[in-house]
Length: 425
Image (tube, rainbow, N blue to C red; front, side, top):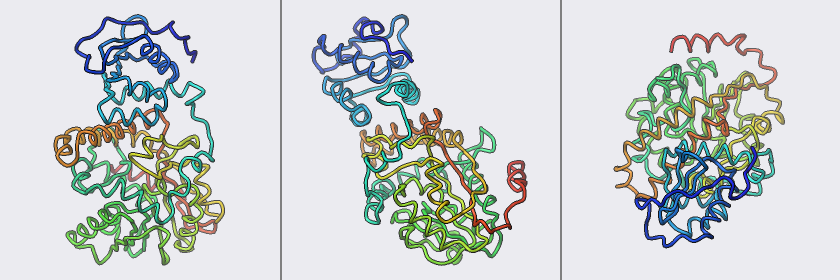
């Protein structure tokens, strides 16, 4: 994409008094800096309104997507580090978006990816430069506490009835979120070929829904690990209420503490919080846990290129997080000679899942405001909208990888067990 020269693509529009506020007078340097900012991020088709109502836009009809900058300080911050400061200033109300936040982010991401400064290129070492040693035993607990222990009542407002905070599986595009999350659990169980009497270990169990589903539907026993105190307390209470506490054990501990032998190993939505520097540790845990003919499944957000998450996301939402490429995931399997049996990408399913979450979050925003404040609402709206945009654009992927030991010949001969499930859904 050719980036136009400054001055050949932005034109002033009549001042809109309805957008003016107390940010002070706009000077020529302010409009020049605005042009510079938009040129830096790839000249996306945006309408920009400054704090006194002055508008800048591409020639012709103003773009549908608009950005309102409330004060000069916010403009300066956007120029210095847009990947960090946009999120903070949007959360603080110093930046507003017109025309839809998801649409705005998709528009900007497309343009930024065409610029040398922001184009995503594979750099596995970037993870270590941006967040070294954050997923040690102590660091992992702090990271999980930051995001997951804000209160179960908050998540109950906008997750499904089973409290699943991972990608759902939509057999039909118009399926409800509840049905899609049950379908996701069924898909996982069928890929693992679960049978009554088997034992399963789960690393990173969230609020415990998958473990309870496995017990109820497939007659297995499950030991599930998680370091979030809030989630483990909820999971144990649900198990007692459903009468399955004798067949599922929820352990408040790190995946590195897993002991015992199991017929199946499963991890849904945890690898993103492990970090490539610790894949060898997780691989050894899986190796010592799986029986000779055991099957494993890892379900994780992923990427096509090795690149760190945005600094705002790492600082405000998910510290320590990193979605791997498929190549990076092989560090779990290759050193221990695990055979990868099946890989599926559910990217579009996650985009739809996040759309459901965002709609439900917005529906309950008044209740969220009572729990927290307006800044919290705006930060989480930005986070969920960004997820929708990134999965829609293919910046993020969702991988399900099934694996086993190389000597295990008791693996499915065909994919008929999954085809039967899809038809039944």
